[in-house]
Length: 195
Image 1 (cartoon, one colour):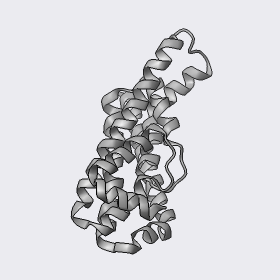
Image 2 (image 1 turned 180 degrees about the horizontal axis):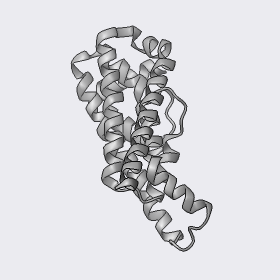
Image 3 (image 1 turned 60 degrees about the vertical axis):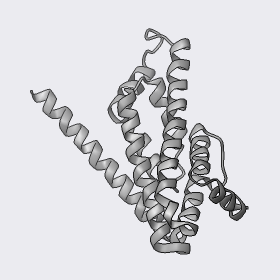
Image 4 (image 1 turned 90 degrees about the vertical axis):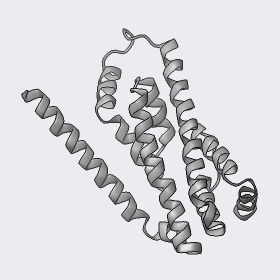
């Protein structure tokens, strides 16, 4: 089935990857998802790989933006500032401090089963600044999709196997990046408190 979807995707080119990226980021469950199809396209038509990666990035950005805005304005209708007390307020403070890391890690890592949509909805509900949210998602998607296009071009048919064999290493790198960012946030907070 993936081969027939891949063949159809090649026929539609970057537009097909854009649509798949959009639907995937909106929460429509897709078997194999953007990652497998992007690698397949990069292997079969290397000249279109980076254009397809750009289309996947734009589609994913749009889908995540729509989900984020839906959560932001949907929650605004039903919850007021006064209603957010106790645990909710603590979660809001934590999310303002570290929440975008919970968006970045699943957005950049293609095979770690983390629920990105939950964190995107949380970011919208917690009124994360739109520019910060979009910057984090853009950085993660560029790394992920252009990296997969590069692997598809360089490794050919073995690109998916490479990701499977090195999945834990890539996940460890993503976690290490998150820990470094948490350390930087705490360091910045200490410097501000001292000043």
